[in-house]
Amino acid sequence: MKAIVKSKPENGIWMENVPMPEIGPNDVLLKIQKSAICGTDLHIYKWDEWAQQTIKTPLIIGHEFMGVVVDVGSEVDRVKVGERVTAEGHISCGFCRNCRRGRQHICDHTIGIGVNKNGGFAEYVSVPAKNVLHVDSRISDEMMAIMDPLGNATHTALSFPLLGEDVLITGIGGPIGAMAAAICKFSGARNIIGTDLSKYRRDLTRKMGATRVIDPTKESIKDAMAKHEMVAGFDIGLECSGSPAAFNDMVNHMYNGGKISLLGLLPQQTQINWSKLIFKGLTLKGIYGREMYETWYHMEMMLTSGLDISSVITHRFAADDYQKAFEIMEKGDCGKIILNWE
Image (cartoon, rainbow, N blue to C red; front, side):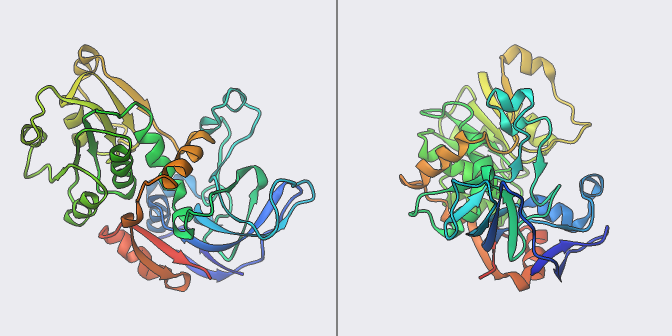
């Protein structure tokens, strides 16, 4: 079969002919129809410090995908050949303390599809049956292919109540930040203010439901608040940028008792004013992946009852044109990019 492989420990990825994946008794074989490129895939493509420390080559990358079941293992009874499905990209052990208390998303021994084992940028992929998800037939193939990152946005946004709240999203222009803005609006937030350096992505996010999106180098958060008659500060913060400056700006503009979801990966040397965190009584929550599997339920319910995130998909390419897709990703003038394998 054809697959996009990180075959060498250097910049780039390559389309190769590789053996078909084998399935065990509890696995399912999917024929991929659509996959989507994630920022993680770009890190692997660029072979940055994180990729060098994490990825063992050769590896078929890709963890955002959907497809049709073409074979099942001998012990699988809840997934049938011919079904249209997607999959949770984190494989939990099922036996550690976190798994057994319903916190599979922070399993002690998580294995990532497309990171620690061969992934979905291929004509076929093998995944554990327990990770396979059936979704409502009203949800399109393209939406199914991006439910993994939508899950990150859902986990980030819905970690704290949003109804009537003022929300600040730093790094709002990235696909997860943009989808989080749409979820905040859908969930009844009052004002959704976002910051991002990219004009392309600021324009994209305005389509997703943000009240106001600013370039923080040209307009201050304080000025944006004044234009919407906000006096005290933000109730909810969604940090999606990974920027120390943006995070500190968020802390400075939170209302006392505010709550912050931390999705962006801040550098180890990030410094903050701890006194402000303490005296404001702020709550910080680290966000990793999706809460398995409650986040998936939330996504399905929102998508079938009016949440529209279709604008976040900005480019579509045949899988053979993956190089063009990654070049656009590297420039950053895009939302989600779909690769078609059909």
